[in-house]
Image (cartoon, rainbow, N blue to C red; front, side, top):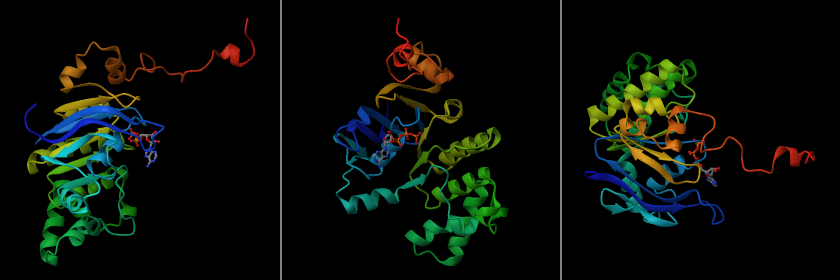
Amino acid sequence: MPNPLIEIDHVTFGYDPSRTILNDVSLRFTRGQVTAILGGSGCGKTTLLRLIGGVYPATKGRVVFDGEVVDPRDKAQLYRLRRRVGMLFQFGALFTDLTVFENVAFPLREHTDLSESMIRDIVLMKLNAVGLRGAAPLRISQVSGGMARRIALARAVALDPEVIMYDEPFAGLDPISMGVTANLIRKLNDTTGATSLMVSHDVQECFAIADYAYLLSSQGKVVAHGTPAELNASEDPEVRQFIRGEPDGPVRFHYPAEPLATALGLGA
Ligand SMILES: Nc1ncnc2c1ncn2[C@@H]1O[C@H](COP(=O)(O)OP(=O)(O)OP(=O)(O)O)[C@@H](O)[C@H]1O
């Protein structure tokens, strides 16, 4: 794979030593591409984004960002790296008591000393890109869930980040808003030349816009990776189960347990 901007190199991680969340995973994120990280709830997708952001150190292995090994103890490095990353948090995390305009202006006020008129122009351009320039004066409490996600998107790209990380960008959205958000992620990636990482369990939405995808198992392993077309064509039962959303397959519906009859004292 050519020229990854970010590389997760044989990373193992657990929040406490007794429980491994990510188990020797390797992923590469190519410049200019949209890469999806797919997996069921709790498999460690958000944790992976935290390791890239230097929130926690890997227990084993390394995270490499544009040639530099990410070291959470190196605060100067973290500050530099984080300036290059825009983040769309799960459910947007907007400031509900501020206007749409002020939400998008927030990172510009925090991280730059641009003039008020420059900030205004940038905010209106970012809102225009997500189709919501006209909503600038509204309060967050007055906008729909789908609009809120687009506002969060505009805020995530306010500082023109090189990397945009999306944590469950489709969570809680109706099908139309999902499609709109997916198209915007692709469009923002292509118009800004950014590199996008998208963590999600919405396979079809991700496949519609991703260049490449990784599939994580509940054991914190990479089960498969490839282009959406390659993964769609996979004969691997676990990949097929996940992609088709089948309730049972190699990934069992039942958590391991003794037979029900035994548990109920009905043994033969
Ligand atoms: N700060 C934390 N401290 C301890 N355990 C945590 C912490 N954050 C997450 N976990 C645990 O780590 C595991 C992986 O969580 P993570 O949020 O990375 O999963 P995920 O794949 O993003 O799931 P979801 O799609 O539900 O958000 C879960 O079992 C979770 O309970």
